[in-house]
Image (cartoon, rainbow, N blue to C red; front, side, top):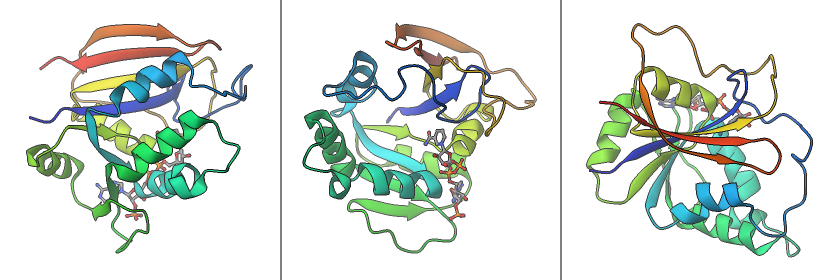
Length: 192
Ligand SMILES: NC(=O)c1ccc[n+]([C@@H]2O[C@H](COP(=O)([O-])OP(=O)(O)OC[C@H]3O[C@@H](n4cnc5c(N)ncnc54)[C@H](OP(=O)(O)O)[C@@H]3O)[C@@H](O)[C@H]2O)c1
């Protein structure tokens, strides 16, 4: 069965945002350790990436191969190449077509959509935002594991990942990695 992993980019107060903090904009000529761990090491086992419409369109604009500029570092070309070739699912009720190659549009209850994808042939499935979909996955225990990329900022605004739940969701810690600028990567799996 294909594994479903959710990437959770969050501030210390659990907001889905990308705030500024010392080092956040340091130019990287080569991928840092967290990027290698979160992305490069998974290029071979992830074969489907699922995004909400806004995140999908944002990724297409910024991270597709067509967005790369000649001076961009090689790891960014490799990341864009991965995103171009991987099977991409854009969740949308209002779109009927998308321009990014190897993409399709799905809609419906998130658990049902993920259940259908799970039954398809392929490698693992990555839920890559936005925050509302990931929050739903956390609340409904839809993913098998979660990568929390925690930024060292108490932000005080932006969409929340945590909200009231009827039952607790217990997770098992698999690993912890530290970034160069105070980020922490926490990898947890769902306890079933
Ligand atoms: N990607 C990330 O991990 C991340 C992290 C932090 C911050 N952000 C920021 O967060 C913003 C986007 O996040 P977001 O949560 O507001 O939006 P999003 O999840 O990227 O997109 C929301 C849209 O997805 C569609 N959708 C969601 N669930 C669906 C379902 N079950 N079936 C069909 N369509 C569904 C709907 O589009 P329709 O209206 O077309 O139906 C909905 O309006 C961006 O500004 C981004 O920069 C992203």
